[in-house]
Length: 296
Image 1 (cartoon, rainbow, N blue to C red):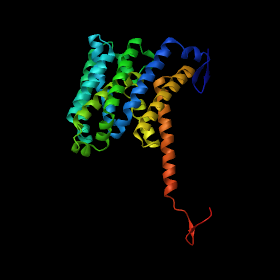
Image 2: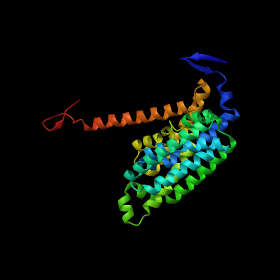
Image 3: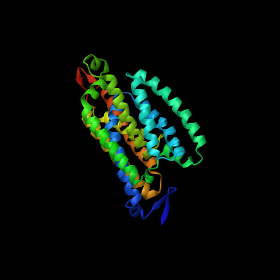
Image 4: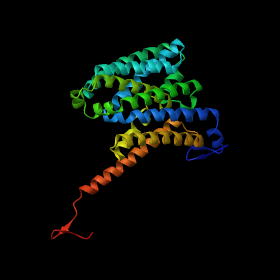
C-alpha cells in the first residue's frame, strides 16, 4: 500500500522491500562498487583524469551492445572495451594533456562503434537504458562475484603501487627524473580505472558515473589534503550514499541511481559552499582603530 507524498509514492512496506533478495543483491553490489570507486577516485582527481573516467564509461557502450549481439554477458563486453580503451589511453598519454587528446580520439571511435552495434541489436533497448542510467536493482549473483573479484584486484594493485603512483600523480616530472616508471604506472592506473568504471556503470550508468567515481573523492579532497584520509573519506561517502540511496528508493519507489547521484551532489555542494564561506571570512580584513583590532 502506498500514499502520495509530494508526487512520490511512499511505501509502507519499504522495510520488506529493503530486505528482499533483489535489494540485498543491490546493497552488496552497490557497496562493492562504492569501495572500488573510493579507492580509485582520489587518484582520478589528483591526476586530472575526470574526463578519462567519464569517457571510459562511454567507451564501454559498444562493449555492452556488442555483448548483446554475441549473446554474452554485458559485464564481459563492458570490461573488454573499458579496459581496452584504458590500455590505449594509458599507453598514448603519459601526461594529462596527452591523455586528453588520446581520450577524445578513443571516445569518438568507440561512440561511433556503439551506435553501429546498437542499430544491429534489435533486443538492446533495455540494455542501452541500463548502460546509460544504471540498474542497481537488477544486479545478479554472477555480477556480485565479478564485482568482488574486481574489487580484490583493484585493492591489491593500489596497495602495491600506492607510493610510486602517488608520487607520479602529484609530480610526474620529478618522479620520472627519480627513475619512477611513470608511463607504466599510467597504464596500470588506467586499467584499474577501466575496471572500476565497468563496475560503476552497472550501478549508476554512464551518464551518472561521476556520482560514485569522482564526486565523493572531490568532496573528500575539499575536506582533507592527506591522501590516505581522503581515500578513506571518499570511500565512506560513496558507501553511505549507496546505502542511503537504496533506502530512499525502497521508501518512495524512485530509481536508486537518481537518489545516489542527488545525495553525493548535495554533500559536495554543501562542503564546497562551506569552504567558500571560510575563504571569504579569512580574506576580510579586521577593522582596526589606532593599530588595535576594533570591537565588532
